[in-house]
Image (cartoon, rainbow, N blue to C red; front, side):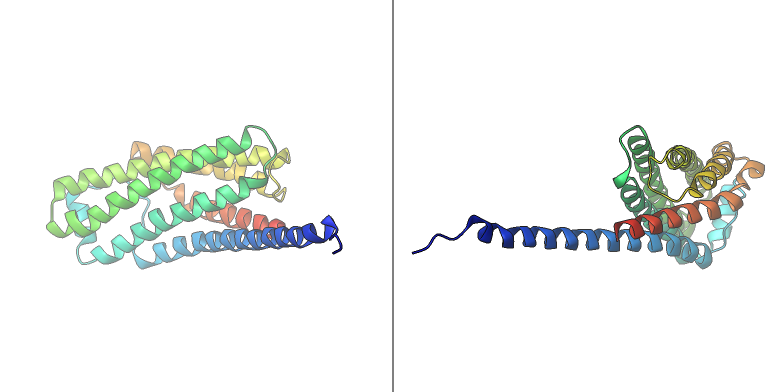
Length: 235
């Protein structure tokens, strides 16, 4: 009987480990791409199924009349723009910050994104209650209060996303995040625009809230470009 060299036994194990790593990397890339594309598609579809407005002052009666006959479309919009986008956003942020250099950038971005995700999911729940329950029952008083709560939560979410964008702008500029350099000024502009619109939603100011027509497209472009760049680096 001859002894088998130890290298012969470990070589298949090394090959298997490498194969497993490649499969995990491929799965991670696909997950990032799915979340990135899903984020953009959910926003576009959500804004298409029901009319959207940046007017943040509305009475309960106005809310009930606006939703009358459109409860399903309004509920679908809340599910897409507050539910699906929240899940996709945190998935993209986690992937984007996965290769971040040691420092404050990653924990700051991740914590702010997690908080924004939680707020968005709360908005989704309240929105579904408003559209499927309160509006159908015609409870104007409670519908107005819930609508105001959703609006202010949206403002809080925007402020948190402004923190994400500001931290990302600095991290990309300092090369702490492996993203294209042009995303740094884009993130900086996004941080300012979405902070202004967030304050407008928190204060129920139609003038400041109208900035959302600028900040939302910037947000979609920033998240989509960051996710695609990260998927390309991983691949």
